[in-house]
Length: 298
Image 1 (cartoon, helix red, strand yellow):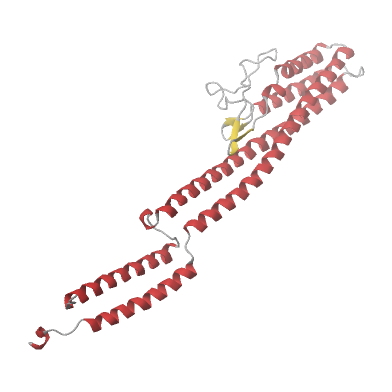
Image 2 (cartoon, one colour):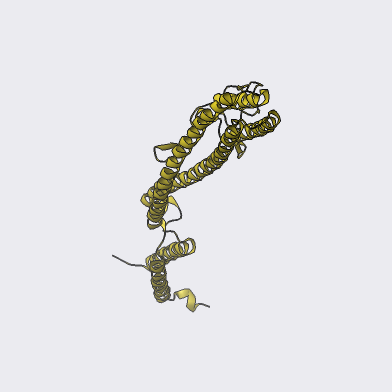
């Protein structure tokens, strides 16, 4: 086989071009910190990278959902704590009012405080967080922009209350109820009892009839305690789920990193080695290109 000068030159140029491509690849890896910069570099790594990135994005969304759950539950617990204090104060007033030593004017003053506490409980029932009502089921924006809890003069509800569960997905396939059932605390019975309690104080009802409201208030207090216990149990569960999600996020990011992040030490070694090869190729090429007749005709 006859080897010509043009064959040697073409082979040399082709090899030098390939060397430049290798240098470019290692420079890209060093600059970006990634094994590949386009799917064509390695389709397998690219496909796995898409799967890992989807998994990481999903887990990060679960973390944001858990933050929303904490916000909802913490505000609910805070509101229920204030409800508890209000109900306990109402019970104290009922015990005082049932004492036969109180005169009609004094009971009228107690009735005024009962009315104020009832309004306070109504405000708590209409608690709004992030512009959403948290004790109104899935009707978090109210009815046509109105507050969900509006009372008639007799203490009954002016509008029906939404009691649907509000569920938020906090893990793959796991949803948790974040709201407190409105009909377990802010019941129509609660507000009608308080309205009747206030009217009984103003009307001068006998001590025994007023004393009956102590038992009614005890029932509402028990309902509030049970609701807080249920909320606390769900808060403990979400803490466990949150820890698991955080561990999953660390694992997912580690897998994604191993799949697509370049080993910088290895890349630097490869780049140094390829640079030496490239210099050798250039030096050898200079020797291969021999003088021609034209070089002597100048």
